[in-house]
Length: 136
Image 1 (tube, helix red, strand yellow):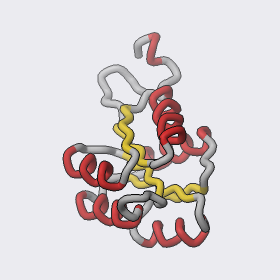
Image 2: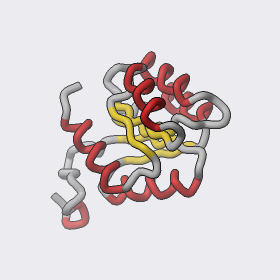
Image 3: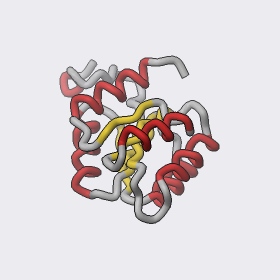
């Protein structure tokens, strides 16, 4: 492991997990991107449902962190599109609006985890690590 990689959980020669973060709140989006990048993950972010669908169609991600309350395309539709492409993608749904009901629906549609917003960075990192460690 390189000195600069210590504590990041990314061993030399091993590809860092790639994560797509989708949130229309650009402050939240940038915060989550930064937190995950500091943990050694390869992170991309988009601020719209249409951007998410396009990114999922043209790239391979290990984890999708998806805000369900998107203004242009319903987060549930993005979730369905992601699941239609691959069942190997780990999906974390987030919601600040009626989170118990919304996250329960997301789990039924194929999300692997649901987190109520605002999401504590440590809780997000813990959830990502847990999902990546679980079998496909």
